Image (cartoon, each protein chain N blue to C red):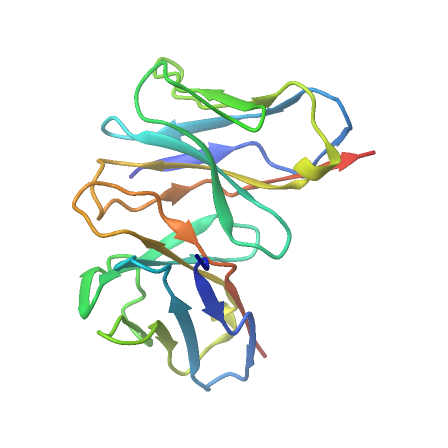
Length: 114
Length: 115
């Protein structure tokens, strides 16, 4: 079945460092890809998405490009801030209907030191 | 517009008791999804409901678990005779009506601990 594999954490960086969180997927069709973020004590929030190959999703300085040839959707940010400390989930859906289930990776905890 | 509400936020039950988790979707949302996150794992889909209908329950354990979304009131995820393995965070998400995919908005989760 479909699955998402992402970089294990925790990841600890200093403020203003470059961030990469790796994510690869397995899917039978042409999934849509997402990154969600979960701040402490809160629910998951959609960070960015890409719905077809070579699309780039971006938001709040974060970017990820849908790479069909490598089945990857790595999350990057050029200069992280303390406020970026959170758990990040890579995810996909197959199809694009209201019945589409989100398939999540296991999450990567990111901590940013001042 | 209030977000998705879940209560309680934390629930402690002894083995054999029942757990009831509630989810109030965002205003105007008629689709509700439940996901479970076991320790150190990602979220896993459990069930998708619309008002008074279960659309997809392929992720629900066959026994002890049930879900409903009545015409009035919140969606309820019910776990009967809880066991230690049910300890997890349970997240609810809601989306607007429609046939195509709409963003699912997540609640803060209910953390269930079974003693």
